[in-house]
Image 1 (cartoon, rainbow, N blue to C red):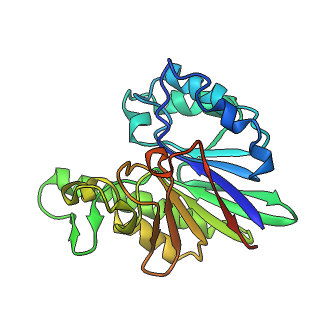
Image 2 (cartoon, rainbow, N blue to C red):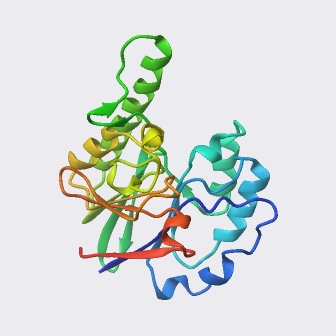
Length: 237
């Protein structure tokens, strides 16, 4: 059994140091790894990233993360990534890693993801160059996710995202903003790669549970949804 702790959208600012730390002190008793599903900061500044780094440093299990849209806001994503990496948090963006857990291999591939919507109600790469660029960015990220998931030599395969790959976990959000909360291309990448579980955040008013068209479990771990410092999912290897 592989135990995966996960949370997203903690939105830590410079005044939030220590907010989550008490709940993380006994994390190894509950989980083998901690996955962070983006929007770790409020505005994407290196100063906020240092708060995140101190909060999740040395928690007794490996910590993997993707960035979210808030983490890009200050145009300092590379600096934010550097701060987190220096603290021992592995930041994924179009790549993956394999961790030994209880004699099994847990593979995690991550991307931020992007918007565009879902089949039947989605943007298309047609018309103005701005629209083509918008959809093209989503397709590029989904292709990176598919390649990263395919490259994992593992027993259990997990996709870590910020944006959602399915509409199921968005229920509760206004329908008008679904295209800005996720994209079906991410779900296609998951279904093509034998993935066992998808974790994402971003949709604060959404619901926790969903499934891809191919039957892969999707979980929205945004903190306003799970209402705790983290939640744990157990996977049979």
